[in-house]
Image 1: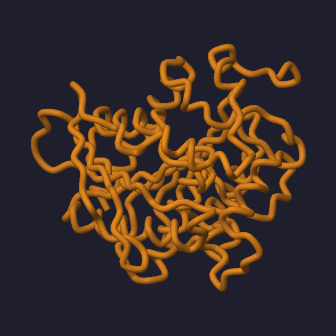
Image 2 (image 1 turned 90 degrees about the horizontal axis):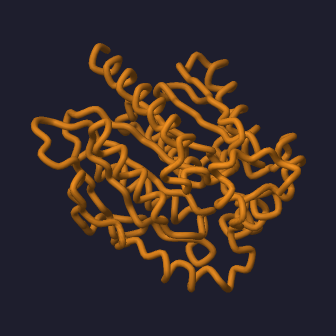
Length: 305
């Protein structure tokens, strides 16, 4: 770890590594448990059964701030975990923070996971959740968001919505997003042993999600391969300094800017992938403050369009 100047607040999570043995995934997912996200003194959590890909039924949470009045914006949030892990306590923490701080209604689904359910099932589940969320939102503004693999799913859903003539989100929030199966960036070549998630684990992730399949619409799995990002909403991207995924997040930002999409990208210095796990760190607090400010501004702009 000494070769990376990780922020001291992240020293604990820098010792964590995503499991590289697929046989351990079912046990880990039983321990994590999606249902552990519960109401508290800031939010109310309700549970719903919502449509999934191919006629499936999904567990979906709706998280709302306590004592809210009037119509709320809606955030459709897709958790990370390499397409193979359920949402963790850190994901629950972020969902609650967005709900209470923005404030907004967060719709947060337990999409099915690879390798048992490879692409296109997770992306299809998330698209179905987005459609359900639009019905719940009515005329309220809609944000789509995701971290890591959840970022890839948020991008896939946005591409699908555009291509299928569905209402587009008003803003997009992506935190250290997965965007490119090709794994050719400088950061992917450099951070082969970075904390939490590295190039080797990225390869395992893509093997679980895609295997040897070559989908006809590859951009729904690997969004950076999209021919165009036309009609995309304003987009906020955060990348971590010591992360194999860093450069593909930056490349996405550059592509969006080149195509005239309002976008900004922030590199979090001293951070590794998964820094949202450090839920009480000042580093995360700073990031959350910046995200909330950006989201409020994006929603104000949406109201004025």
